[in-house]
Image (cartoon, rainbow, N blue to C red; front, side, top):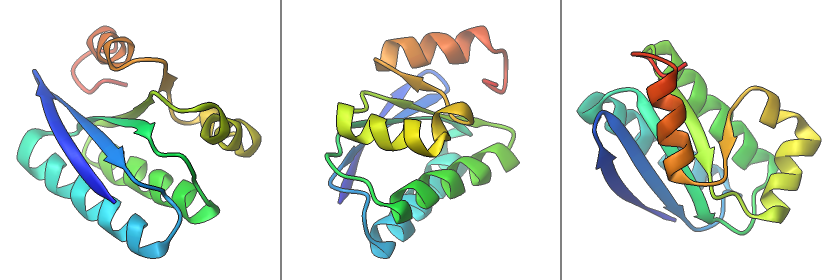
Length: 119
């Protein structure tokens, strides 16, 4: 698993490449998210376009990342979630606690509309 970082104003778009399935992946995701928060601030879009599979560990990792970011008065939004991964978010009701957008542009607009902390 690896990440590609793209800065848009005060929002970091973090493209995740690989599957979110193992503990090592979640540790890497959470460490990377925290380094982004320390470096760029607590507004993060996780672009999951290149994630084809997510396990219960992956869901837990995203929830943990979201909690860590929200503790810093920020937010995490998801974008470009494929149909099979989206189904997991719907079944687990994770889509009720974390925003899922069709595009990075839509997520960026949501941050802009929600004020300084993005949520």
